[in-house]
Length: 126
Length: 476
Image (cartoon, rainbow over all chains, first blue to last red; front, side, top):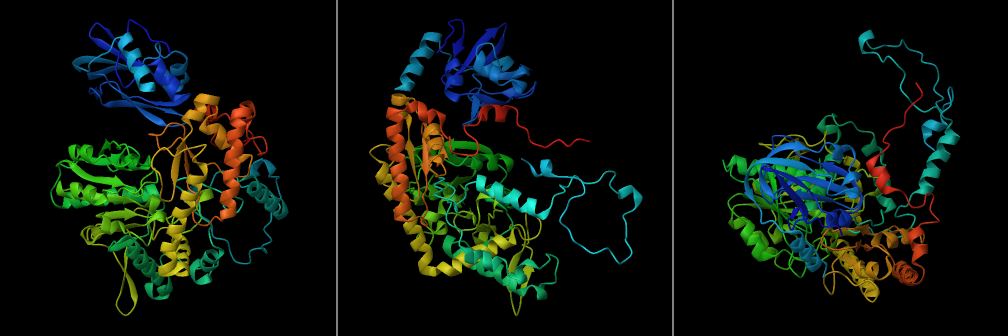
């Protein structure tokens, strides 16, 4: 399981990177390995509002469909269209395969550091 | 090989004499530009084509089919005999009522019997499947709240063990889904339910017994909590087989239900059925029902409910499926229906008990009509997953159980034997499970390669899902 120190994490297994007031959001390596090969991705549209702790999209594996939750509240300013045609990119490079970028952030979930997220995943495995 | 690949120009099997009346054609602008792509094939080759497809498939006539939540029970042949009667097959949906009195009597009788089993007041047969019935039921709930000017209700509560179709239907009906967690026993967590139920709650969707095969003991409390906040209770009939004729959803506090005639009432399920998902409701929702209600004074007649939500499907739904279900109901009768349910529960417990040393159930010491095992430990120990065991079952002539569902159980297999399997069949299946378990410990590589005896071996499901080929392309 790869965890990058420069990123922040939430317990619903998304990572966040903040760049000049814009939050870049994706799915962690642990999440993609648990879900298995992804075959389909649903993303919001630019201009859509997202809310802390609420689903903004979903990913589908051969086994199941799972929601992807937003760690911040704000407005979607960019989506990663590559994922729509190439969901396998999330499996191959989870930390490059960002889902959405969010601006006008009004609220943030409690974000975990890499070490804290790692400890959380370990405790969930028990 | 597809039938289109077997097609040869000029071949066919129609032996109609030449037309001896003047042909009438559509106006030029409405005529086809190109001929339809219909396969051209001789009758003998056509017969062989479909026999070959039948050999490649697995149905309840081929072997054990313990597909959890689907109630793959045997479909008695007497149902087919009834549905093939010319009085049922030779009718048209627009025929005058007085010429189809027998058909209306079928709908009336089926409605009365199924209302007696569910504790509902009225039922219509238009929805063609379970999820179609769910959607219909939710539209009824929506119509009810709207008729009272109660527009705040935007949420539907759904337990986290629910069938995936429940949240999907709620979203289709314009609702927001609020997931209610299960407690340690696999039942609805009452405290969490109380927190979620409020003046924005339009209703709850529940199956009972639930997806884990466990009867919700607190069902009366659950429906009361919802009613107290002004919501309505929807019963998903997917698991009715366990309790039919014993407990009625209406008495549990439910206001609206759907049934799956293709599960509980022995009509064909595999291969697309066709299905039938009748929706029943208490009097308070009857004015909103879709389709028509059959009434009787001197004769049977049809009446549109006053504030009907409209049509969910053309005409009366899959009518011949209702004929089959009625045939089943009348064959089993008042004693046979609950007995079938009890035997379904007995068979499931027999299997659960026979598997407990190798594959313990995820929840509960006993079950209703089905149970869920977790193969998480086996996977950790041997690398053999629920998928591998499912594929191994195929090599033994058994249709796999439902896999990876419900989502709250890791490496889940959900087993529903149904009442129509003999003890010998269950014993054979148990032996197969035990053999596969030993194989997982001793020769896991073999199991990773299963199935090897089927027409196709392990398929690339990921590639199929990512790049599905959904149609045949003709050489133009």
